[in-house]
Amino acid sequence: MTRYCMFMLLILVLSSCSGDTDEQKTGAIDQLTDRVAQEAVQNIREPIERAKQVQAIQDAHTKAINEAVENM
Image (cartoon, rainbow, N blue to C red; front, side, top):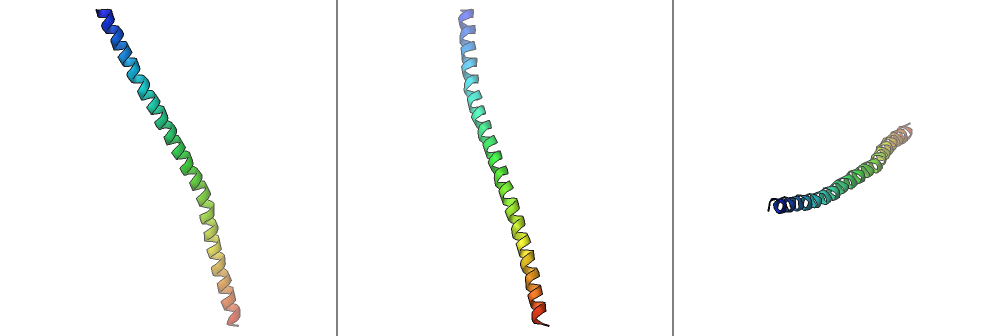
């Protein structure tokens, strides 16, 4: 009887642990995928934002030069 109870307890413990591990692995993979995707998006957006800022500065500079030329 004791061996049977120990055997059943072992089976329950092993079966409950295996399901959690798969879910944890899946969750970890999803988290890693999300993190990598966010980093990729950020790495794409940063240069675009910088380029827009530089373009705005260049446009303002060009406008100032054109106004200066017109007022001469």
